[in-house]
Length: 81
Length: 145
Image (cartoon, rainbow over all chains, first blue to last red; front, side):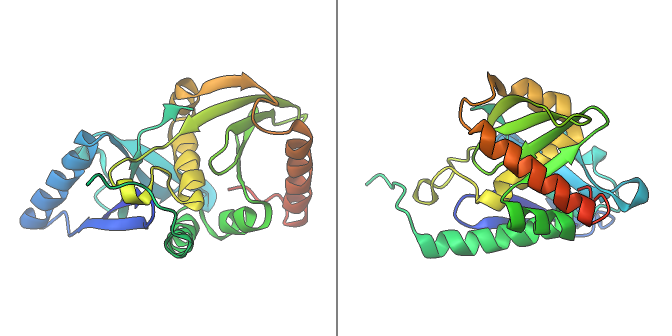
């Protein structure tokens, strides 16, 4: 699983990568996940829905990330423009 | 000394290329093709559709009639690196809106400032974009992203 963050001037950057079934990796992924939410990021998990349609689900806790998810994408919280 | 944003077109082009690859891998080939062809993304449910412009408002339309409804102004600002500015690359901006709409349409729309059509975007341009997009989708046998 990769944790990616959209950033100005760079595009996405890799924050952390690991196998959530390995305890040491899971700890690192959870710490980075929480750090990004503390920084005010939103987290989305892309996936395929019915008929292969591309979908995304917002997650607010690492426990909500499906075990098979390949990526979690962080991006700044939306604000009214 | 306080760092401040200085435009760097090489850096921004590189970031945009990277963002387009993330768009392709997340929303799919058709979404990237739509973005590169029209400069926007579109999502639609049974009742409403949305045109997602980079760094500009989202425009809602009636999915059945194509009537344009409102502009929804929403921003994703990141001030963590002052030298890079606060704006995400354009392709990341549309992908962030796409993911937020796909995941929780009501939360994103509830966050946005709502304005009548024409506040920031020329309605005639938006109508042309929607017509061109629908024609293209028809040619591609109702592409949806």
